[in-house]
Image (cartoon, rainbow, N blue to C red; front, side, top):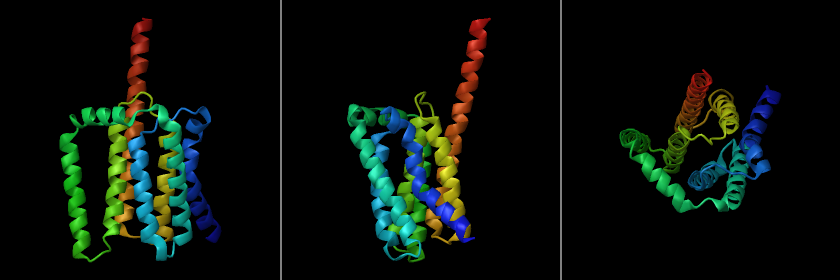
Length: 210
């Protein structure tokens, strides 16, 4: 059991780095810098939340690796203009307003539930940020032909490991557990959209060949 737990914790710490190795190796960062900034903010909040937690060492290492990783990605991503990414984001919001409103109301509800139960304010704040990041990833990459599919495959595997660790090995705050569930859901949705696009491209190729 201890070995299994150690493997899960090691995967949780190293998983985010492994996701981006292909992009870093090619020096072709396609991950959105806005998402990197939000992940850094979320990780900083978690460092504060888990300062006195039983999972201190694992969570600290996980979030420190995220902060260092995404800081490095931002440095490599200088070729991409942040203003251009914001314009792309605004354009995509035009088609996702209803989904955004629904999501935000859900997150606000989650926040007030947390206040009723007198949970520490940073718990729902961190969970809200994680849900927002997962949702924005879906918006940015659902129809993006450049999306790094290997990143989402490894990310899905890592989030499933995190879910197992948080749900069965070490009991963790329900808000963070919900946020991981949403990350898994959106990862699967992005991968399904890739499969659909691949199928459509194959059909087009067959038609052109005929």
